[in-house]
Image 1 (cartoon, one colour):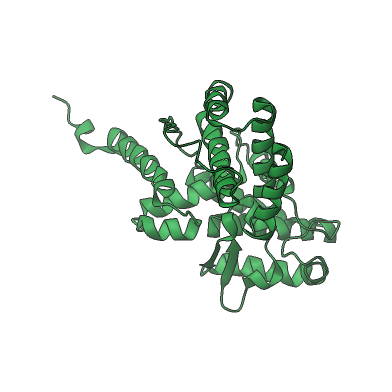
Image 2 (cartoon, helix red, strand yellow):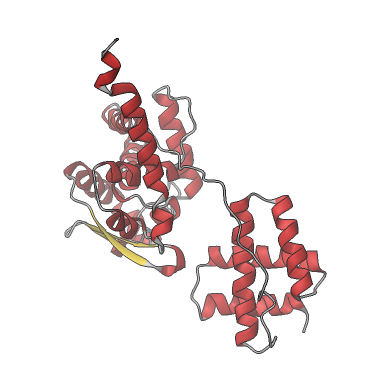
Amino acid sequence: MELKKIITLYLNFCLEQKTLSSKTTKAYGTDLTQFAEFSEGTFNKNAIIDYIAHLHKQFKPKTAKRKIAALKAFTHYLMMQEIIGTNPFDKIDTSFREPMVLPKVIPMNIIGKILANAYENFRQCHTDFARKNAIRNIAVLEVLFATGARVSEICTLTPDAVDLTNHTVKIFGKGSRERIIQIENHDVLNALNRYYETFREDITSSGFFFVNKLHHRLTEQSVRSMINNQAASIGYEKHITPHMFRHSFATLLLEEDVDIRYIQKILGHSSISTTQIYTHVSMAKQKQILSDKHPRNKIII
């Protein structure tokens, strides 16, 4: 059977039996199609070795690693379906050292200024349209920082996932993993209650908790644009992304001595090694504190 047809069968398997998200399945499809085109429809050990070498030349380590992982998962499917009898990845060394890229965080004072600006915008609204936009902006910003959720997870929240009575948000993350996050800050709860009362009809009709002016699901790009506008409004020139709220959330919790395994659970990381990147950010902060604030600096000999 032609390799591209087998890839199509595999993608259907991912959607229907593994119940992977359409976004993840689409990414698998892109990665596997690239391999099929590179190998000209060939699937064997030599083709895989050549492809891995190609990936390291063309892509950053993180991207190459993801594409190799997709190919490994596809290989497992081929063996499970008895399309191939042996694993061509056997005795192929796919390990490599990735350069450590520390997650970018937003300074705490800047987060405070962004939130304060959003609330000030609300207080200065003169039209119903502007008021509704300001209410939604506040709710989105508060939830991003209160939960550490990914922007895609925020934008796909359904009404029944947000329990304002019990102060919980149920989030469906990567691999359809579910996690429940408690929200106990009164400002955040007030913002969510005010948003819900304002948008109740749109929420019910759309089937999503966060909605846009067209009464449809709020898009990830809309959130990015809103954050950019908020940052520009306070005169902050560095680029801020929704994901930086997640990084800041995790780093600040770690700096407050929250156990890293709790942070792992809240973020929805399947492996503790993913969460451990934030310990390096925390150490960088410690280095800065000891460099700038250590009392020894005041002793001149």
